Amino acid sequence: MPKRGKKYRAALEKVDRTKRYTFEEGLNLALQCAYASFDETLDIAVKLGVDPRHADQMVRGTVVLPNGLGKVVRVAVFAKGEKVKEALDAGADVAGGEELIEKIKDGWMDFDKAVATPDMMGQVGKIGKILGPRGLMPNAKLGTVTFDVAKVVQEIKAGKVDFRVEKTGIVHAPMGKVSFGPEKLMQNISTFIDTLIRLKPTAAKGTYLRGIAISTTMGPGIRIDPLAVKSILG
Image (tube, rainbow, N blue to C red; front, side):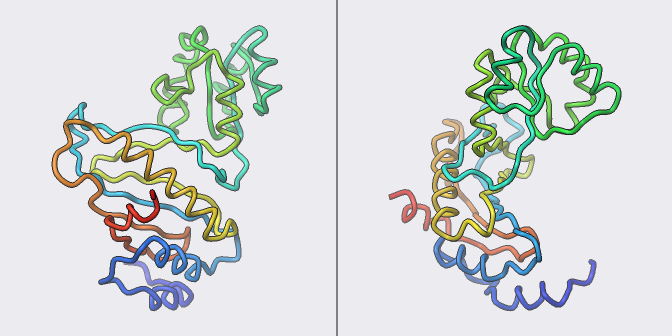
């Protein structure tokens, strides 16, 4: 295990590893533990009582955080005709059809999210081996395959987050920047948790929210009491 730096060890000393904090306590502590010279991101990890090996227990979705993510997201849109202009007018960084696909085949990858109109998916499938491993393949279940490109581009730019439960039953997602402060971050967290609860599979039995932890990019993990969820959802 690599040796941790002095600043990390100092931050870790502030955290009681045996305690499960309330959201307010944990969030304030996480912000105190942020020590990097850049504006760190606050991340959340939620352990769910599901078995992702079964299709009827898969948890996957999107959420538009009320305060965004605090970072610039570059969006590429695969479209043709008037949909190209619609995408660009909505804020897409690049939009196009066959020429955009050829550009990506040649190695251009300067974007973070991809959207496609349904009539382009046949052609986009040609670069699936390039986009797929990077998590950039447009997906109808995530709303990124649609003719309503303007709406989706605007949502992504505003802070739309895609999430999916991992094989271990854990969902990871960014909640915004440390500079947001506790109030805005709490609003983002409560919106995300509310969305997770709404997506609870009917096949999931027993306790659904089994564990929650938050951390900044460079800081230590802070365990949150899952029972404290009631206090932030009202």
